[in-house]
Amino acid sequence: MSQPDMPTALDLPMVDPLPEATQKYFDICDEKLGLVPNVLKAHAFDINKLNAFAALYNDLMLAESGLSKLEREMIAVLVSSINKCFYCLTAHGAAVRELSGDPILGEVMVMNWKAAQLDARQRAMLSFAEKVTKESSAVTEEDRQALRDVGFSDRDIWDIANVTGFFNMSNRVASATGMMPNNEYHAQHR
Image 1 (cartoon, rainbow, N blue to C red):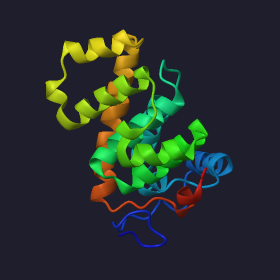
Image 2 (tube, rainbow, N blue to C red; image 1 turned 180 degrees about the horizontal axis):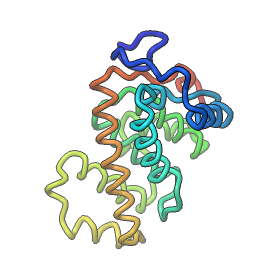
Image 3 (spheres, rainbow, N blue to C red; image 1 turned 90 degrees about the horizontal axis):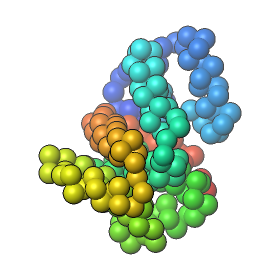
Image 4 (spheres, one colour; image 1 turned 120 degrees about the vertical axis):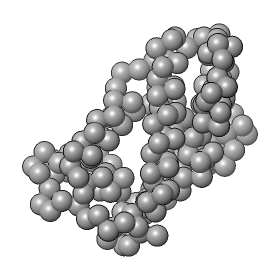
């Protein structure tokens, strides 16, 4: 388990002082989110690693896409639920609650996404993400076609696969390093 002043169980303190650009990024996070996510603090022992992580995360989760921000967060929660990643379930569960305006959806997604009231598009997307997470080598053209059948483009399928892959990677890193979510996430958007 992480120490109160450390975001992970590893003794990898943040660079001190942070470079000006990194401090500015952290200040923007604090202003917009009310906190600097521990995942960013965890990567800040090596600014190049932090920059690489943040660039990929921001591109996948915030850049223009045929997937809404909510849909991308739903994928994050689904993957994190399968992988039992406490950090990501807590952080991205809060994001689903916020973006959907529905605290129940956020909780159901964490516990059992199949019990959630979802439309056909969301169900197809999450079924695909579940298969990629559990057995990616078994994905077939039928699986991709099922996404097309509910309106996803091939670019959207690329995005679904990449968001799914990213969270499978980050879940494993968070769990393996004992990364703990910021306490603030627990009470947000309920």
